[in-house]
Length: 137
Length: 83
Length: 183
Image 1 (tube, helix red, strand yellow):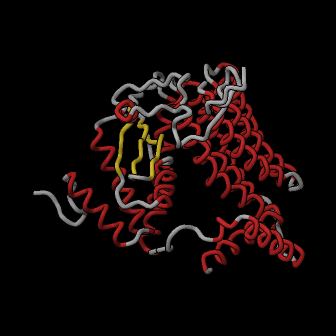
Image 2: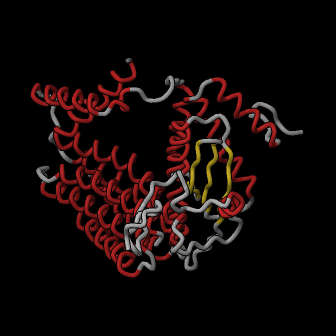
Image 3: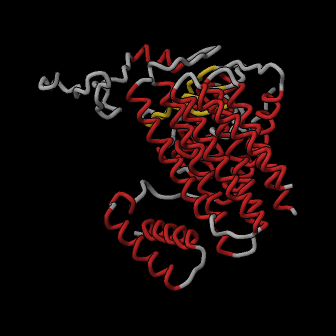
């Protein structure tokens, strides 16, 4: 009984996350909704299952899945937020101050081939490695 | 009560699916896919609670790990490609 | 050497949990797999630095994390059910002195669950975090909130020099120490 109540709360919270993902106006705000609400929603559902099921194999599998969700889901969304912000083609709307943009303009950091924090990658249009190699077309 | 949970999970899946289809950028679609995988894990657990058989539960574990890795890889891809 | 044994034990525990029961076959195969992994990946043996753990501040940090989880979900629920979501976003730069990369990882994951904030970019040298805020009031308030979180994380995990460096940075910005009150 308590397991089913927990699972109900969990799915309700996942539904709140889904409504947030549909309604929020900006892509970074949608990531807020995903990290916070759906992580807790899925962990509650997994804990509800762990309470309901009897066999110890099932309980340990569910507890391990819950621990992995808590560890990995916020981190994956952090990576997505960073990449969405850094990608030049995606419009990110910030209402007030944006100190990261000021810092990047100040340092003239360009996420391109000269940037040694990012790995070298192919230019998507031509597929030529941007390392001064002239053998491509 | 499990039936009510199924209904809520289905509505959540519709919401995430809308974002997958309509999202103006690739990041929105990744959010939709991530949400759909989460609803999938929830559905696996609800089914196990309903039937009492836990034969399908390791799938929930694997889906968790796979969704994390695939989200991380697509994040790298978005950053490199810029769109 | 001791930290790699701790890591091996943790990986073995995860392997046995994934298989379900702690039978001899599971434990033996787990030992083989963990040993093979630690031989093949030499970086996994020595996580950076000594590990300092103080249990009472760690318990306080866990309580704060759980409280933040509840508050942030309540906030998201209220924001979602409002007929017109009122969001006023901003990105704030928060310098975090005294933080090793491991402490920065812990702080970033905790900020991801703090009501209204997610980390956008984290740099290790010098330690800086850029935070995306949903309801923006003032940059100083955001900074103070995250400095409070940083103090709790360093109290649980940090060396004494790190705590002193953090304290020095806060004093330079004019934040009073937790013991001293206002006028």
